[in-house]
Image (cartoon, rainbow, N blue to C red; front, side, top):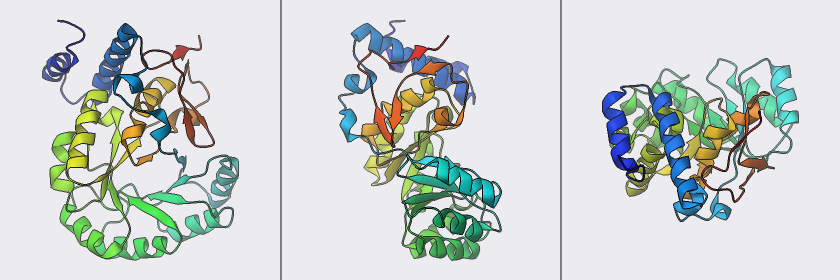
Length: 269
């Protein structure tokens, strides 16, 4: 099979590998890296994108003790945007701790933590008063009708994360969410992410690129798509100490691309 026929290759992989989205993502990222190198262009150029159009990336602060959260916020001073994990009984204390250190814009990820629509709405309205830009996955992913009810009353963007994996999931979510979070490790790679971007744009939804804890290979792959989207949360490689690769860098939240072909990634070994 011709390696430039990457759509056919994706279909063949999808027919053989079921559910293993991370494995499929690895294959797809490697394939797209090869295509970029064969054409001798960076991926963003292959897609006709201008890196300068990329949004800033946020830096994530996980759930921890209040003192640790405060320390992490201090350490994240170079980053202009923060994403704060909530969904616990002490959400207000967590946000209060963050706000005691900084007034920079924050996004909030509840990780399905609020179990009733009334609780979700109450928390969201309070968070809105704290300068939160949007709320990610406020309720369990199966609670689409309840999330739609909350969205009608919230007055702040609601973004799907756990509720969306591939393009096929998106149409049923349009009434409940203002946007989606695309993660290559969930979607199965760059090609499916591009389909998701097209679907979301057609439905008038906002788009965020997110990640797991990942090396610079996966983060760089996602970053090449950043000019397509509204928000970015691509900090997974910044949260590890043993990253075996170097690729797209982040300087005060801004992606710094090199001009190497493909992903532009090199090994540190």
